[in-house]
Length: 118
Image 1 (cartoon, rainbow, N blue to C red):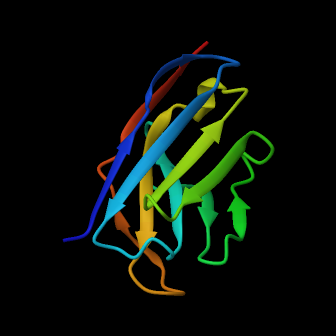
Image 2: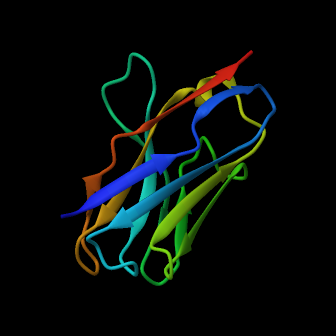
Image 3: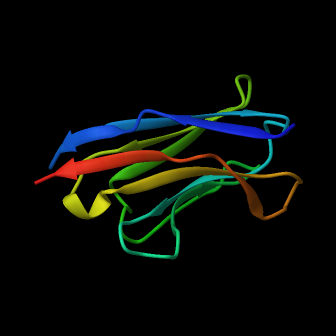
């Protein structure tokens, strides 16, 4: 059974930092993983960061320079470190993973709420 479990969300002040973590099971650790977010009132999830099986990283424009995605294949985890947080970073953050090499990120966690207070 494929499972992604996020942790690390919470309330943060503007300018602060946070680290989100996602533990995966049922999926080989080497496949692509990523973080997406859904802001209040928005229907679409926004790509925050993705790391490929070759450890290539891409970042969403709104977080570029403030976010770092990393993976630990031994533990089958992916983390997202964000700094200089802004109120517009407030969202539910979802971990996503691919179930095959080169596949799309089509497996999702339950999400973790991040709220940035102004």
